[in-house]
Image: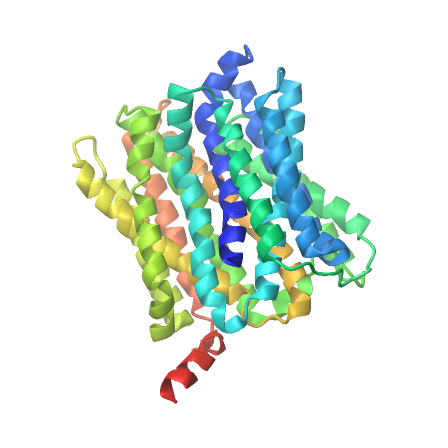
Length: 461
């Protein structure tokens, strides 16, 4: 039940972060403002998540993971209600910031509970289940948002979090035993401020680049501020005994390689829905709901993966699966560049289904290997670190796709987006995803074998 409970929280956060984009036009009409200005509902949430994610590991150790997890789910649900009843943009932004704070605590702390409660020999199976919500949220979000906005109202995109939140709290109280604080270390306030400013400015500049909502000089200034604060944090972390983001974890080869290679793969999570929405809606003229129903087929592949991911990884090993599957994942992202307006829907659906399968298999392997060689004392800090890196990776994916579109337009001297620009977007993201195989090549051949070694011994006996 623990992977299911944590998966509910992860699904709620991933769904919420994508479903809002579909509802922005209706929300702008309701608040009597422009869609561009309404985008603050998304950016305020992302910034809050980026700022508070590093605190999650410290909070779990300081106050107890179960207690923080319940409080985060409760706060996320309450702030969702606040979003639905907001009467002004200011009220909505405040509610979204609180929701982002809760989301920043909810998912990493839930993962900490899973890592502490699940034996390492069961970790692969648990991560196979847990990777589904992260993939299904961005896929289900567009069609669900389009359906709710079309046949109900935008308020329901927030109200659907209520039953999921109530169910999550009930399951935590019933199935997860209480734990106790494991650390009394004080919060690294200097590190929190430096990391918060760095992550917030970087994520905001990447998002602005992806949506072209800010002049280039301002984006560069934001990105520069983020990089400077990041460098200052690295200097600070080397001189403090308990930094809020523990960079010493990168000395563990499996963690470092899985984090780097996994983030290159995560470019696809941010970029693929972004590019598919532009291709299907702008390029082919489909409605948001119709486009969302086509992209939804990738969820079928992700769900099929759950049945075979564990035996595939146990049979071929983490290193071989990650290298070969990274290339296959990149190929099927690039194949989307072949879509045309007259391409049969079943062909598009088949490519998306197979691509969803390989992408889900990749994240199951990456997410498991990330924690393979860590002891229980490192889990909290590692979960915060990984969550921070994932946030940056997804934002970078959208930014990279947007930059590719703009470079393609400028190269051909055009002022309007055309099909060739989107084609280059899929090719570039596919190449970046495939290039992650270079990182995984550095893994030892027996990486992660101990996660299912006991099971093999039992079978032999």
